Amino acid sequence: MKIFTDKLRPAFLLIPLFAPLPLLLTALPPAPAEAAPPVVDVDAETETVLLTNATIQVGDGTIIEGGSILIEDGKISKVDEGRIAAGPDATTHDLGGKVVTPGLIAADTSIGLIEIGAEASTRDDARRDGDGPIKSGYDPASAVNADSALIPIQAIEGVTTAAVAPRGGLISGAVAWIDLLPGDHANIVAAEGVAIATNFGRSYAGSRAASLAELREAFEDAKWYRANQRSYERNQARALVAHPLDLRALWPVLDKTIPLVVRAHRASDLLALIELGESLDIELTIVGAAEGWKVAEQLAAAGLTVVVQPTQNLPGSFDTLGARLDSAALLHAAGVEVGIATFDSHNARNITQEAGVAVANGLPRAAALEAITLNAARAYGMDDEYGTIAVGKVASLVVWDGADPFELSTSAEQVWVRGHELEMKSRQTQLRDRYMDLQQFAD
Image 1: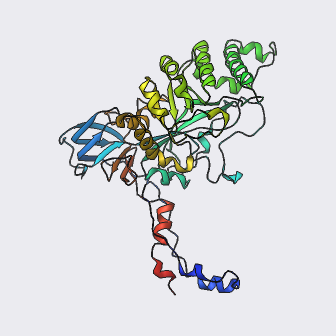
Image 2: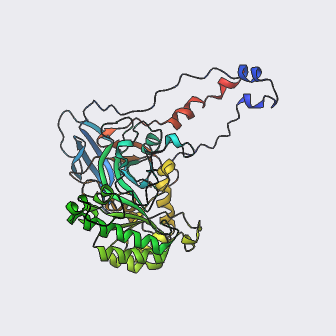
Image 3: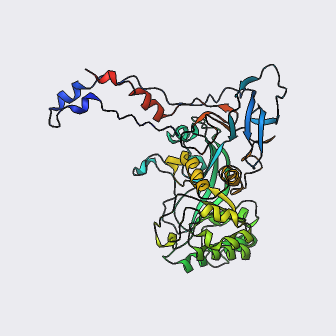
């Protein structure tokens, strides 16, 4: 992320506070024409692109010096050392040794579902029908707004993919997997229902025990309803804990085709979730886990992916009293598959800073990159197509202008999302450029 430290003091700010309104208005220069928001040309076919002379950080700990990457039809078709052959129609970029990484993946976000947190009309991040705590049938994929200003802001800083999860209730709903393609309404959602988002702790009836019991009953009822639909439809059954559509949405979790992604922090809650996952025989991912380091060995033994925020080192609640800066390093040392996230949809781009803080507190650099690429994809079962620079995977790539993507002064120089080369503009850069010339305020 580029930091602009110039102290801008436009002349019109010196107008006396109590000046008449007409004077204030006439003192302002005419605003430059509003620039159009950046969008991807969705009608254009993806180019064949050859990146050469690159330092390729694959995302699994492998580094290829002087390597090449061939992008065809939005996928990576070749990766190798040295220069690789490409057809005459390929657009070639000699990167001069610059670092290329997989596109970064933002876990547990509301990107595309929320614009202004305090304005309800811009929020589609929850089902607010008040109809019980089980909302697993809510699928926000159709509500994702490809014109959201948040999308290019994150994308031009290297975040190319996001897990978009609803909020609220005990079980919030389905998670959509999106590629951050500004303006591409038809294709921004790469996959629907890749996971089910859940909130643990005191999310139901103000009680951890009640939350655990309700969560267990939801899955038991989903099993029962699957086997006894006819009896239910004939009204030959007791009342179920949730609407049948919400119970149906849990079937893929019971089939272990998608994970249950649970937000939880307290060590005792994490142990309870491990036991729940084992008893129901389902795949779990834990997000948050501020006290995960306390039960790192148990999390590792259970084979769970745990997504943490390294800078969350101060307790925001009694659930996070044990938060510490080296949490990611301690989890990794215990053998836990660690992901890293910001849990902030407006600033998902700060994920490289989160990773850098984790490295400064003991997490190996290669593991930090894996945490924001491959492991973030694994957390949602999407690692077959995302997370590393490998043949057959989605061509979402970032070229960096410095040797260390985690260094604060390093920025994304160019980004490809699913083979589309992004225009490196966002509303923030447009506003910066619009008001950079202070001479327009001189008179």
